[in-house]
Length: 167
Length: 170
Image 1: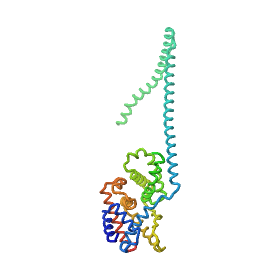
Image 2: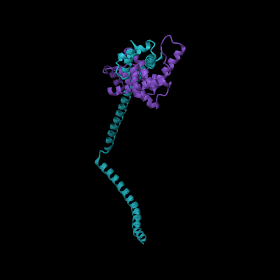
Image 3: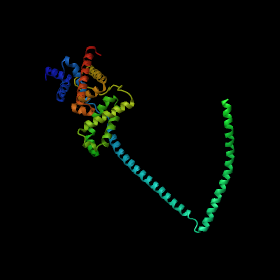
Image 4: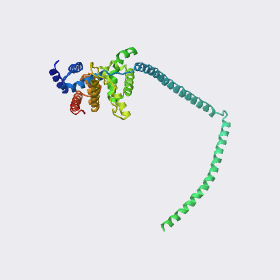
């Protein structure tokens, strides 16, 4: 290919009108031979592209490292999933156990409520319980009266202090 | 896809992914880490691979995204120049010519590194990896117009800078 043709191609290249095939022609041209002085700069550019294209990952251990990561990642994921399922099952079992325990407890209290078979005895017991409550109320009333005293005193003091403030 | 198919089909593109990640990160170790992450991602998403039309472009897109993530997390731009890998395989060169070649490679490398990110990516994908415009659109998730405009700007900038280097030896 003569340099005239190359110059035309280059002009097309700078205007982004070249096809991939034409760009390859340019790379090949500049790679292969000595170029005229006026084409030195594009030559350097195309040689740079070509040299970059040949760069590779220089690491022999890379492939095996990736393979190892892939396979361990697989087992780790499997383990993770199993753990998740196991945790779910454990939660269900514990919850079930608590629910069962709760149901069992209410059953026993229901039984404990019905203590007396004889109605007379039951009446006596009830009376006893009510008496106990009423005596407690009586005590409480006495204490409440004391508090009332304070309230009354406060009521009496209030208007006086208001008058003082008013003055 | 089983492990064997993965090794035969996907692993061979690792160098392309590496070069692309390197263009973003400018550091071989970081680029290698990204490629490894990409390959693991591809393996984990291998079920979708049959649905993807162009899986190589898909791998390149993952590389781009992970590289950008890494740049963001490292919060830095490409600061280290890509120094190695600039040897030109040309025969019959005197030591002086070889040094001269290496210097011009380095200056081109530097001038491409100064391009805005998008232009740098596009010129890499087109002129080094030889992707079609459609593929570049797919990799960079851009429309055709943006790709062409950015490539035009990148090439114009490179051309102007090359002339400057030649004229003033900058």
